[in-house]
Length: 193
Ligand code: HEM
Image (tube, rainbow, N blue to C red; front, side, top):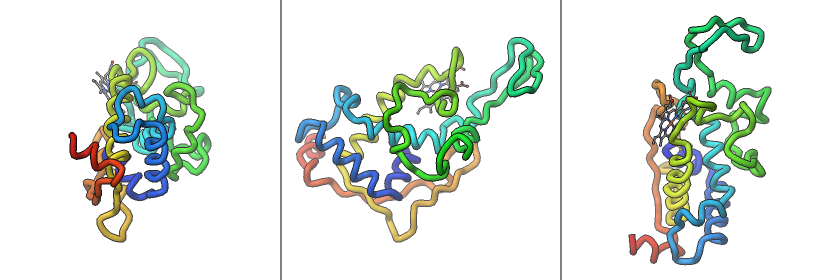
């Protein structure tokens, strides 16, 4: 959520596009709810693009090969501890056009949650994240509500600092600070919460 909001505050045109999508598809005067999520593909693009650039598990979790295998031409003995550099794959210039750019549109038209094995923010297979379904319901609701109800701006002239901190779950080095103002369209919604 913090990475997504930071990217949005640095890219006001993306917030505007997401607000328009919400205003068109969610009943006027109603806070978006679970029944609206499937009508908001651009919101999903924003979440996917955030998880591509800043995966919460950049190395997934450690895995162990259950038997001898060959990966990319390398012989891996059974019982080897394996780390998948998901951050590296999701930011690889051989796989992604302008990988360092925040372009939610790159996910437009993606059916389902994955794009082969080049986008796996929740890992994959039997040890993939069991919370994926929950996360992909809760995050659109929370992020969507922040976009629907408020206009967001940077605190000063500088862009939000996107430096990555140290840690297994890719924290931000500097916490996000931003200004928000209730949108006139959402005054009723916010006053009822
Ligand atoms: C945006 C939110 C989340 C992201 C990006 C995320 C990402 C991940 C990733 C990358 C893994 C490692 C998968 C692998 O190595 O293949 C993982 C594992 C796991 N996640 Fe999540 N997760 C999220 C939310 C959640 C939630 C909401 C829950 C629980 C309610 C959860 C529970 C777990 C558990 C228990 C594992 C370990 C699974 C295992 O080792 O078998 N996660 N998650």
